[in-house]
Image 1: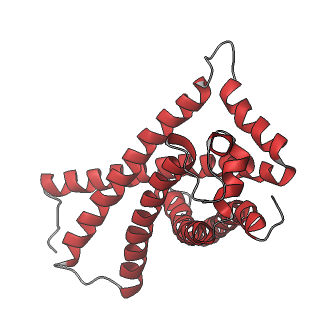
Image 2: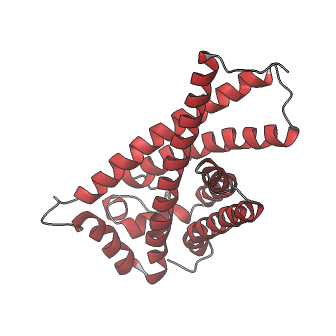
Length: 235
């Protein structure tokens, strides 16, 4: 019976694919950790302006005097930027390889649909992140025509409240959270699979449960403040 061997090119391609999947898994888990911390900070808005602004200021003074003012935030930003570049690069490289493979091999409809959702949902999330950074961090934009000026944009709590009093801002945020839910639901499971944590049926069931729990906790936690503002529970 003849045996088949992988060519050097095939072995290299397989190794590169594994490395890309590992890069996606590790950077994805970095983002999950950050999302949980960011969600916790956002929930401070439920306790009012003083609690929310104190938390925002504490992030800038954390580690002083060993770190300069805002030092921790810059460390986090650098890690997140590197993780984002790695995650996006790995994602598009893997999608490109999968697209090339489908030209010569039939792909299951379900797998293709999931891949398409992750691709376009991920692209939407990337665009949302860019807007989110411009909105709250880099430029600090108040989309609320009734609440403008330095008193709003320089005050984190007032900027958040002013922003989510605008209905279309709430819709954009909700749409982003729907995309994030689907991304986490599939992404957490895929990361655990890549890291070898789904070797048995029970392990696979735990991974699916972990994906669902993480997605629900993160998305519900992120939705509570803007919806509370939109319905007048926070002002």
